[in-house]
Length: 193
Image (cartoon, rainbow, N blue to C red; front, side, top):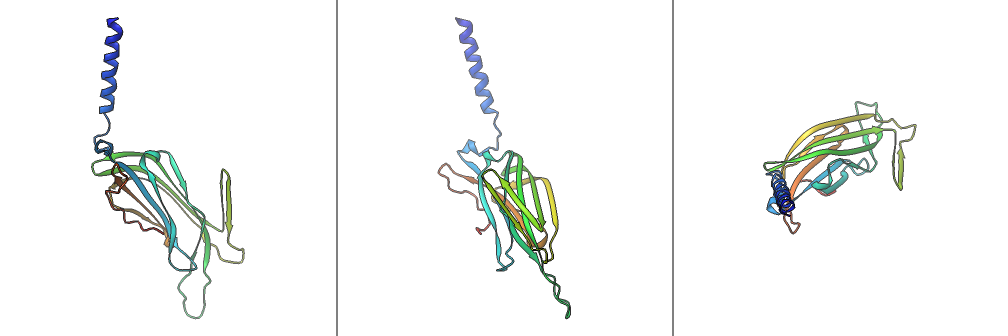
């Protein structure tokens, strides 16, 4: 009977040691959690104002998480040169963000960010129980733009990381700590749309 008791104590000691090996920068040690705020924005072609989507996610759910932003129309109107007016070109924006890995650093987090932005005449979004499509008429000049970005990003808490794209599009991401009552301890300057 002494042997099983010794093994149980040794197992307990090993397990408690594993829990102590948690990242020293993990805010859980201070009874805090981390949320990530991100936004994909563009200039609304009809109003001329910023438009887009802003979302907040608990960091613990983001490893391997893809966010697909809603389809949107954008345009590009070249400056009028003399009497010859050039018509505006229009496109349908399809964008997605993926975070494949994250970790804690002193004063913030690091993450592997994949951003895909695709602008063409026609786009469709097919997801389970959801399907939408959007198209620019054939007689209207169309935009074509594609940018795939994969990068490791260091995000100090409360600091906004920005990726500026063509045609007035922008992606922003920020990390903030929350106390045990869910109140933000850091300010992320990403406006609500």
